[in-house]
Length: 213
Image (cartoon, rainbow, N blue to C red; front, side):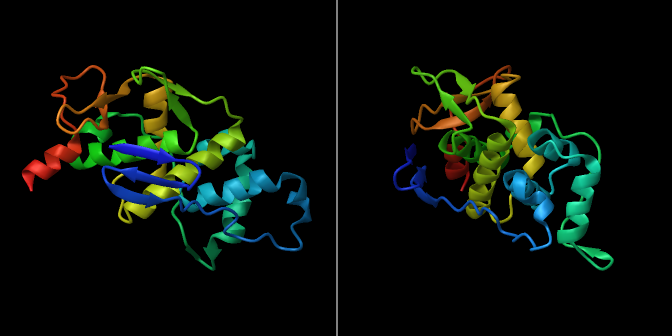
C-alpha cells in the first residue's frame, strides 16, 4: 500500500521505506559563468536532465534553451577529452505504453514511478482516486519535479528498467493521453498502473511477483 508523508519526506511503497534523495545543483557553476547568473534555475535543470540522458527536445521544453546552448553545456560539463560521461540520444522520445505493462517487473517499476509523481507534486488523484490530473506547473518546476521523482526512483532501483525519457512518456500517458490509470488490487488494496484499454485482472504486479516467487 502507498503511504506518503510530505513532512518527513519519506514514502512507504508496499511496506518499503523510500527516502527522498533528489539531488539539486550537483555541478557547481564556474566563476566565469556569470552569463548564466540570471538563469541559474534553468542552467541547473539542464545539467540535471543531461545527466539523466534526456533528449535535447525534452530539455528545450523545460528550459527554453536553444540546441546550441544545450550542446555547449554538454561539452563543458560532460566531456573529458574525446570521452563523454553520459550518452546523448537522438530522435523522438518513446511513446509506447506497452513498455509499462508488458511484464510484472516493468509494471511494478512504472507503478513506483507513478506514485513518486504524486509524491513529488507532478500529479494528483481526485477525491474518488479514480482520475489523475497534472499539477499546473511552469516548465522549470515541471522539469525539476520530474528529476526529483526519477532520482528517487533510481534510489529504489539502481539498475532501472525505465530511463528518464520513458519516465516522461509515463507521465504523459497518465495525464495528457489518459492511456494509463491507477487501478486497485483486490488482494492487497494497493494501487498499480493499468492500461485503460486492456483486460484488468485486478491484481497488482507486486502480488504477481510474490506469488511467482
